[in-house]
Amino acid sequence: MGSEKIKTVELGTGGPRVGVQGLGCMGMSFAYGPTDADEARATLERALELGVTLYDTADVYGAGENEKFIAPFIRANRAEVVLATKFALSVDPEDPSKRTIRNDRPYIRRSVEDSLQRLGVDEIDLYYMHRRDVAVPLEETVGAMAELVAEGKVKHLGLSEVTAAELRAAQAVHPIAAVQSEWSLFSRDVENGVVAAAAELGVGFVPYSPLGRGFLTGAFVNADKELDASDFRRQQPRFTGANATANAALLEPVRRVAAAHDATLGQIALAWVQQQAAGHGLAVVPIPGTRKRSRVEENTAATRIELSEQDLALLEPIAAQVAGPRYAD
Image 1 (cartoon, rainbow, N blue to C red):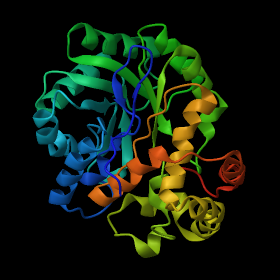
Image 2 (image 1 turned 120 degrees about the vertical axis):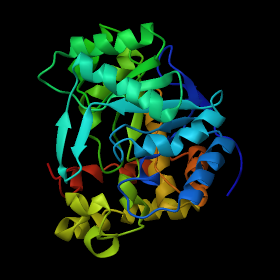
Image 3 (image 1 turned 90 degrees about the horizontal axis):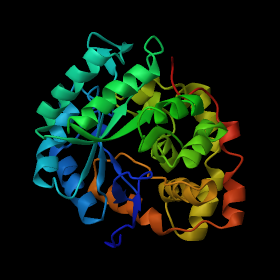
Image 4 (image 1 turned 30 degrees about the vertical axis):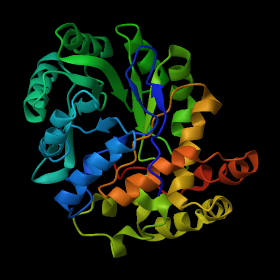
């Protein structure tokens, strides 16, 4: 793989300048089964060498353990990296299927202090509301987040998995730099409203799971049979049973396009997401997750692939045919 650095883009009007592809750090210590910690740390370093500057984590990933895991790397490269983390979600350690969502001011203030301590930094570059608690007025939540900016604890604000109306309401309280939601060849719901709203408001878009949690790479076909028992994808409806079989068949056009470009399936999936920036008129910075240097080299190389109109036409029907919802709940 080449070592050419990726290009940069401003993530939202007045937002941070970052590499056009970021790195999702969750899987380095959480959710995807056993990991090689040394290789994961080397992956963080290799990503930076390749121009990746946006590093994404959350307090819920391993109950803070993921923040702790990337903390030494963040501190060692503080001037070069843009650190993104999140609040709002907590998981019952006895039953991971049970989740609590909180957006109230006391919870936010406690969460940011905890994250700052785990990360060992004075300021978070991009702080996301991970999920919306409908019991708390959005204006109250964003108002509390804005206080953190005024106090110098946070530089920029972000929202995850919100609607177009929620984004507009939040923007009226304080500038939002980025919206983070799932967006890939398998998941295009965001194109029904929030993408256009983000473009209109000058908000950047950060697609998570741009590789369909690895399924779009062809790395596995059925999570039940191929993935470790601790891998949470075994609970995701799209990757098990008859859904997995049906969805695996949808990769055929991706294979055809990949062959034409002498690329991998994953590179075509990422190139498609990156190319949505021009099509929708906004900054798009996907955050594929990996814990291997070879994969981050492969992923960043995808930023240099240009898909033709014919390629895009072949890929267009995929999302509408995907079997199963994104989450079990």
